[in-house]
Length: 149
Image 1 (cartoon, helix red, strand yellow):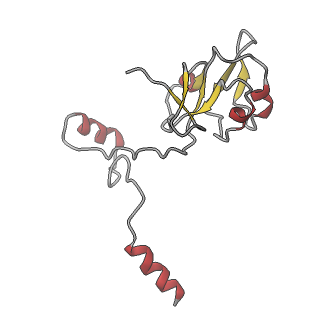
Image 2: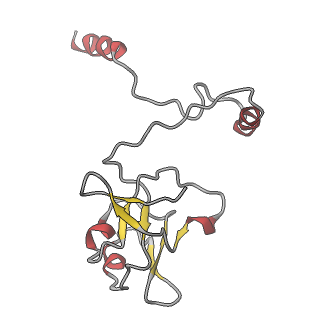
Image 3: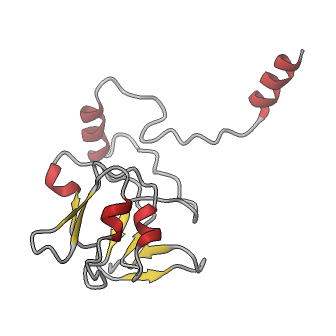
């Protein structure tokens, strides 16, 4: 009886899933994207990210002192010393988005941004050498990218 009650309750609730990028997956995603460009179909946009979301790591190269705390704390080995050995590079493809590097940075050169769509076909685009200046968001405890548009 409790299972039936649970299923009925779930059926009446508002859905939280955003059917991104299309309500029903087409047979060919590439063809569907071409139709979208021509104006024949609309895409579902991603939902706004919640303020507590941990997205892609942001890195301010100017603030970095090269102490290496983030290198030691990274469980996935996504952070490596850069060519000049005084700074670091982050390979987003290996990052597990745990935030240990952010917690270990004494000068706040690393932060978790709200950017979560970070896949790429080009492997070189997955290497992060500098995100630019960082600013403290309205919450007071999260960092976000300061973007110029």
